[in-house]
Image 1 (cartoon, helix red, strand yellow):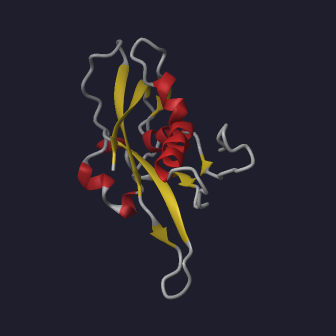
Image 2 (spheres, helix red, strand yellow; image 1 turned 45 degrees about the vertical axis):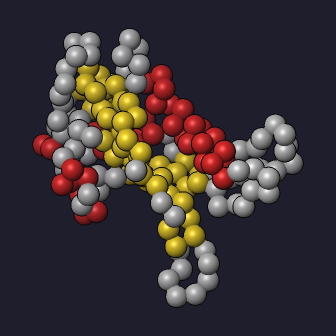
Image 3 (cartoon, rainbow, N blue to C red; image 1 turned 90 degrees about the vertical axis):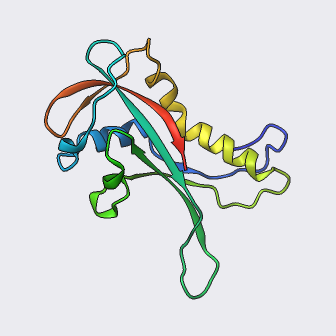
Length: 154
């Protein structure tokens, strides 16, 4: 990322398409029997996928050093909370690492919001109820038209 008023400063974020992360969760056979497909107010065959995003500073070194990272995780509200919170269920997908560069004049919140806007850009078009949605194959083999919307940031 860069800012117009500081073209010489660059901030690095590593990310993957959140739609692909949702497809990975949706298509996981281990999670197939736990997915909930309600409500059905969308076009016939459409399913809402409430997207839950979480991030927190994580220390990469335990005993010495000051290395840290800012991972961003994604899960979907179609999975029960008891399953989403279980690390062994693999119901959360790492979608990004936010920049750990220290901004000189840029406020941290500005860098955070620009980064998240870049990362979550693919959700805008995919979640529009009058749009085409995204076809996803579930772990049980069923194909559904899914409308992912950002519902929660933790």
